[in-house]
Image (cartoon, rainbow, N blue to C red; front, side, top):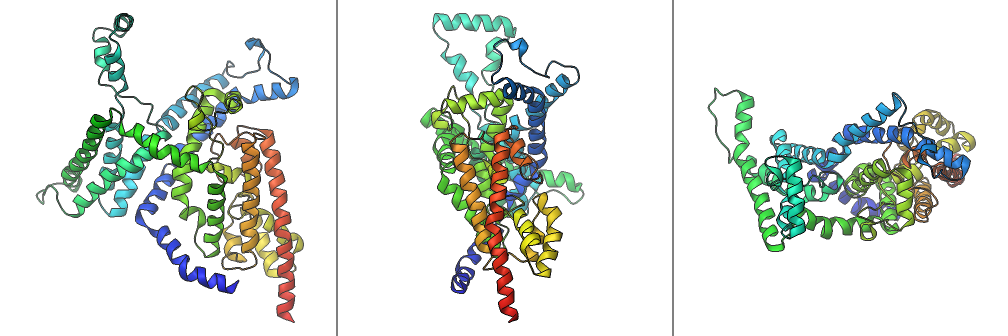
Length: 490
């Protein structure tokens, strides 16, 4: 064990440390963290919408076995005073958060990446957003250009009469807003990154407009960013234009088809889920914050899938999600009418595996209080109980410690690995609903799974089972630690 630890400290830890401090990855992590106000607001709105619109129907179905065929006999709170208004307000919050989460991410990413380079961060955020909008497909222009037959011309006449004097002609230059949600993430990570890096490099090279000393700093700062911003936007839009002319398709569609979808398909593979789970535990063993180091993968790959589920759930509710799953629409390649459900997403780890934080350490705390004979361990257990219930486990990680502990690293890796596999299999076999919304990461275990899956009671039962299982994984190692202390004393 010491030989393995020494080898990893020499060869693995330096690489992991460099990854964890690489400025682009740190900026990406901070970009996702910066989006939390919007993502959590959207998640809470989705839960409010579900409580009002979905939970009464779920209770009715549980009691009666099926929903009535007569829509008027289906239980709902949507049409009641106040609650109906709250339901509509939740929809507006969703419209201002998840529907345009791509725009929010673009600004946050451009802002944090520019800050990492030490240049005007506000201008960097604006450049990233501008590049996103510049690449949106001109769907309406293609639509009106295709209406050349007799039936098409009649449709144009009808729509002209509805739209007014300018009619469809005014729409020809408009773009599609269907790419402003989480589906835009990969385009932003490619095109906006390129533009912001060009902008930052030109700023650092001082290829800027020089303003006189008497100009106010805010004005001078804005003018300084003009040339780098213009060059960055020109480079990105030139790529858009050339590729569009060569392929008769948009860059955002091509990136979605050839980059995003393969990554998303890979993310639904159990091997990928297992590798990420093990990596988080191993990184913590060496004192590196596992979720933070893995954030570019967790938030960049599984995060958008979670937001896709959340937007879909707001639209078609739990019954619609289950119907899509029953039809096999569980990936982009098997979509039904353009809709599909992602079975494993970012919060799936929190819902089914990471009870009490990384390593599923909440039941370690319980095992310490029940079985440990060491006063220092019991004290750490008492200190870690309340924070652990809310998924805060730093007192345990550094108090025992877990870091560089050759005994506890085994259950620290085995507990989340076992529960992740169980949660993954249960979700893939449709024994529980997939995670469809984010919940605050401090939500206690079991409640987390219940809420994240759209109030699926089966998910709560599975989480309770996994939570109990982690106790039996941790307990033998706590008792082994007792024997090790006795041996050391002798």
